[in-house]
Length: 303
Image: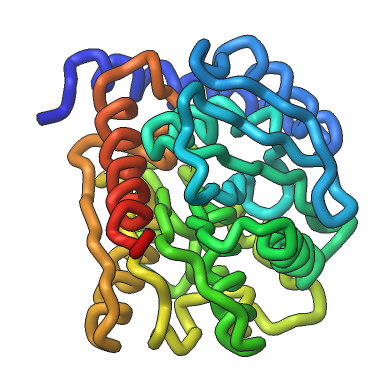
């Protein structure tokens, strides 16, 4: 059951995001505003230590929970519609998920569009994954939210193509899988979605990311991909978000292909509500379930 606090915070989030959109900031200033807000509002849990590093030529951060198991790591790919987001905006969420999974997590500042269109972000994710393998991290789970979750699905496609060892699990929050925006929920859920009250912002971001590549390219929009042979995944999505069908269709297609795709639609929740971990029960419960899924997938592997 949805918590009373989340019902109240829904309207707070909706109002604050509307104020930010009304400023109509240029993209560089918008990114800085999001980072400043994140540093103020979202704190890394006390039981998670931050270690700044580099990965595949991009800035990255290790988020290491106290007493973390050493038999695997989590690669976290942040959201932001491929044009925003960073370690700063998402480290608190990634850190909470790392603590719930009981494993260290690596979050990276993959290159953003429009300065770096597809496949730059994917190349960074693939190179980071390869570095983890080369460093001896043979057991890797991949987690992500929104565009980052879509990027995780593109990553496993590339790994399948190159016959590289697959992740042990995918933990996906509100994945953006259809950049062509063909689902009816891109329209019908807009009035209740605090992040995307109209499809225009998503459409602009999709065009910036895809560049000269068609929006229906399977590694741009995993909705159009062959989903056979994908790792087991758990998908959490909110009832009040335009990307609802992106998640529902993904789960249906993976299941039809014989794969494992668990999905949970959270009543009353909005896009990546897990960012409010530590502030409301609904976010904490989702993170705990996603982390437990990853932990169980690691624990099920032979020692």
